Length: 171
Image (cartoon, rainbow, N blue to C red; front, side, top):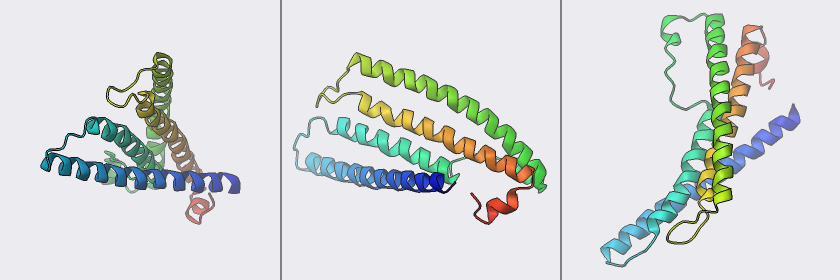
């Protein structure tokens, strides 16, 4: 378990650095693009570069939201019951469905990335491989599957009485 926790912490640090770097890069590119337009300087391909970086920002951000369980959800059960067992059962059902769906999406995305690689398509302005912008989609879905499995295991533990260990940091 300690190895998994260290791997998770390392992955979290990498994700956070990607978010900081890409967020800063997007901000800088938008500012430079605005300055270029104001000064009537043509920065050919600026939107292309912004798109490549934005894909990394958006999809790594979605994986971080899944990790932290801060993504948007429509969990209405909390309005109707405070029973922890009912919430755990609903969480198990939700996470089983989510894991299956996300695994299917990950498979499709893997096929899409593989297809993009086989095409060897390049961007129009800077001739960058298009696959650079599709890899973060695959990475995001793969991480979502892992985090959903983690959440499913937490729900199962809370249903079977292992919630006290989880709350004390017994991950």
